[in-house]
Amino acid sequence: MDVSDLRTFLVVAEERHFGRAAERLGISLAQVSQRVRRLEDALDAELLIRTTRSVSVTEIGQELVTEGRDLLAQIDGLAQHVRRLAGGQEGTLRLGVIGSVTYTLLPRIAQIIETALPGVKLKVDAGMFTPAQEQALLDRSIDVGVLRLPLRAPGLSYRMVASDPLVLVLATGHRLADRPEVQVEDLREEAFITYPHASGSVVREAVLRQCERAGFVPHSLLEVSDTGTMIGLVASGLGVALVPRSAQSLRIAGVKYVDLSITENMDIALTWRRAGNSAVLRRVLGALEDAGMFIGPEKHSEVKS
Image (cartoon, rainbow, N blue to C red; front, side, top):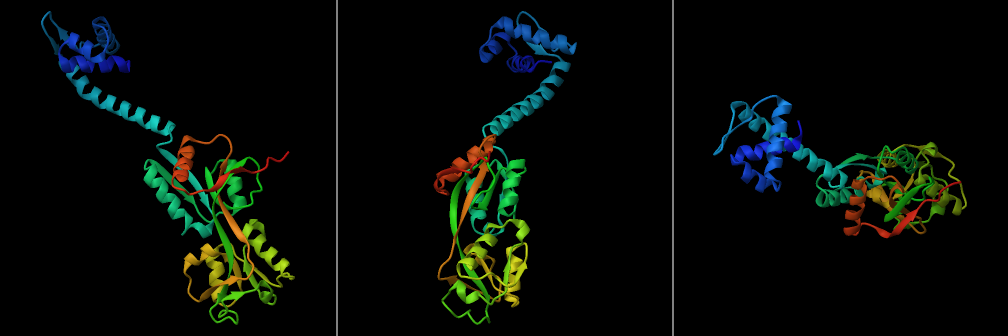
């Protein structure tokens, strides 16, 4: 059964007239007759009773009218859905994010997408370190990542969305907690709580660089995999930590955040594959651009030979 034949039959059934149906469809009278006859032959059933003066619908034809309208509505709805998918107006965007932006940048990104592209659904994988996001992008298990620079993997594009300085986290009873500002040199004898070496954390690397510039290597490193646990251990007095300022949004009791006299800014970027991306991603990038989300131009990671 041809869909155009079914559509033609339904118009004839509504008009009860071949000529008016031809005008409505913008085709010739002969084409209307041909399509209806072809549909009847395909179904091996008489659908219309034709006389020189009138056209009536048979009982079988009336059943087809009822079912056919539903079928065409489903087909038209499916076609519209596919067109919206192809145009990036509907679909799923798989988003990886570092843990510290879950309460800051992520809600803003989600709100922009929801407002501009209500047909796009977000699937968020939170708490992913930068190397894990890079690999997930290359493996195509996520479409876009919110991570900390620098990038190590080739074939990725990115645009900066924020810059997040490192701050010191101390237990409220710590000897340095009342200072308005602390030098990294003052932390020489402290135990540090930081992310695992195996995670490839950009923040961990920045913390160790800060200590190296201050002339020491932490004598004790307690490794934990997430920021909330890290700050909780600081509150219990097990050590100090350097974290991105955005981590303050966690609001964990028993700690105080203190500025460093000299600190590193941790650049945060939205990152995606340079090639082979979906229409949904292109739409999302456009919406974020329109909302003023980006800082600076698009850049690319170097392709390794």
